[in-house]
Length: 194
Image (cartoon, rainbow, N blue to C red; front, side, top):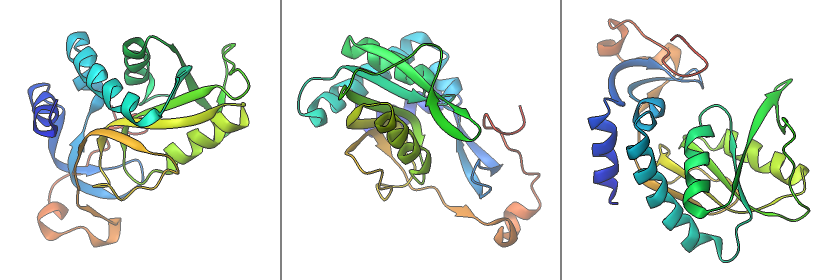
């Protein structure tokens, strides 16, 4: 699957949005990728996951024991990638602001883990997830995401496979361009308005 085909999947799902958005980082943007919409079609989610699994297999350099994804954003695509890789799927949840495994999930000591996100922007949550996996005894052999919004600049400490990489212009709240200042801002992500 080419990056253009991946972005077409987002467009077809009405998941590549244009407007004035406040991102979870607090930055403002003209562009928003709504992964929940692109993944709500199970056939589309399977296509994307199979393409991502193929890229991850090339990067992992050996056996993969399981996939771990941070909730909420990575949960669906993590599960679908695990299905494509024929391994178990688990997810991390935040407890008191820190990622941890709950619900009876546990990693075997030195388990070879693939960490999956939906979108990587700065790489902060990916690094936090990787640290949590390590704290639970796992070894992250590769990571993957649907879209790398950093344009390839995010450093998460391991090889990151993505289906498409785009650079999205962002602005601090006190530096929003005039054309966006007149457009009501919405926060469409899981940490914002519905």
